[in-house]
Picture 1 (spheres, rainbow, N blue to C red):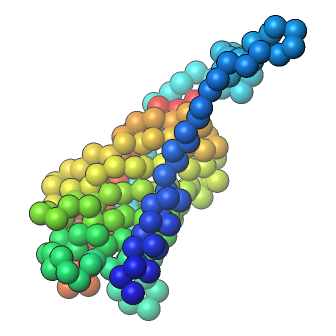
Picture 2 (picture 1 turned 135 degrees about the vertical axis):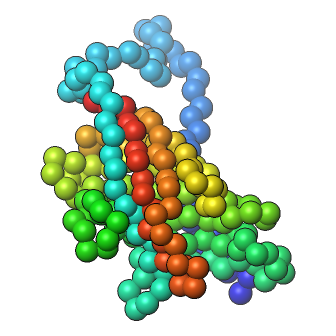
Length: 199
């Protein structure tokens, strides 16, 4: 059973990593030309305009209780560790993002991905998620967050490592601030302020 959980964890970590190892070598063609692995291009060829900075603010609802949770455990913590931080556990999420802190507030997207308990001594999470927007001109565009979330710190900062659609070439950071947490159920509402450079 433990082996199956570790295989599952390895599978999800493998899927979440966007690591590409590229090996380059110079190869010459018959006429002596050298193949170029990379070349500069004009950003206008990709319809990229002037870079701008945007601030997004919304609420992230992590619902672990009830009949319709948006956060589910896929790998439990190893029994032998007996850790109060649930070190080693992994949860998959499909959390609603809303304009206000109430769950019935307007939904602007979803946070999809996973978080894992990555510290034995305190509740620190590895967050790997996409903010998939569904509202207005950003509908279908995503921002990708990958970083450390020290849950009990007042404000946690995580990097924006990229995006898609309107957020191609995005970079920036997200600040997470817990708005509400139910210690009995584990449900939480977190305010996110995201600052992003994009085209």
